[in-house]
Structures are given as structure tokens and as C-alpha cells.
Length: 114
Image (cartoon, rainbow, N blue to C red; front, side):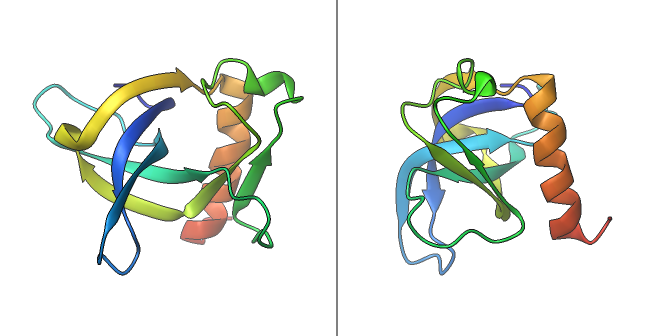
């Protein structure tokens, strides 16, 4: 796994009562000696209203093709978790440099950096 990879992972609900296998974006670099990494939730539930820290990616977007996602998806950049590599099921794809820059802007908003 590398920064920018989209993986399937057992992702906990925010109240930690349960978990669900879902796609996530790897945000932190992963060293072989490290067991944990930071990831952001990706959801296909785009019906609910988006926050200013969400990024909606449509299948028609040229940046979509490398992601390995199957449908329109929202990157919920405020839904960050520190996760164990052992929870990862498989790699779906990756985000390209262009899309990663857009997602980083949303992450800056989450962290109050810009």
C-alpha cells in the first residue's frame, strides 16, 4: 500500500459500535515497519448533503478511471481513521496526482491549515 491508493478495508463507524468493508483512501506514507496508517472514508452514498470538506467524484470525471471505484463516490475527508494494515482486504486502484491535489485541499480545510 502507498499514499494515494484506494483500498477495501474494514472501516469502523464513527461511534465505534460496528464496522463495514468499504473503500478508503490511504493518506499517510506507509513504511514497511509501520503497522498503522491514516485513511479517509469513501462512500457511494451521495444523496445526503455534502460538506465543504467532501469531494464528489463522478464516473464521467477523467480522474475516475484509475480509482477502481465502480460508481459515483464521495471522498469524506473529515472521516479520518488510524487503521491497522491487517484490516486491508485488497487494493482497488489509486488517485492520480491531479485528484490528490484536490483532495489535499479538502484535507487542509479539515485540519484548519488553509
